[in-house]
Amino acid sequence: MTDWIDIAPLEDVPQRGARLVKTAFGCVAVFRTGDDDVFALDNACPHKAGPLAEGIVHGKSVTCPLHNWVISLETGEAQGDDEGRVASYPAKVLDGRILLDRAFLKAREAA
Image 1 (cartoon, rainbow, N blue to C red):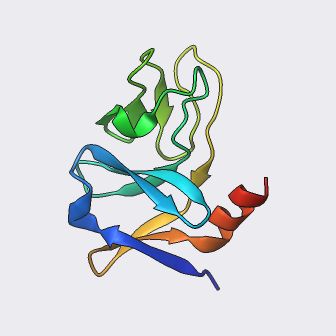
Image 2: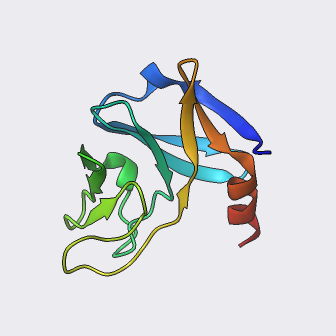
């Protein structure tokens, strides 16, 4: 059974936007698409550690604000000719609240 952490109301993250969320297990970038899908990734781009939460969300991707690397919100993989990956974490919306999987966040802290 998954143990979910309640992060915030969905409305706290703008459509096609992101917020940096501080948890007991570290900071995570939470993204919301135009279709209200929610994703969670490490905030540091695999290229030069650019702040992904400050990037541009388009479709199910985010473009890093430093060097325009495009990262999949679904997998954390760099797209196109770029190579690299950031950790992604299970996220969902339930009753208008954003939830993150506690077990994945704890594993992140131990890594």
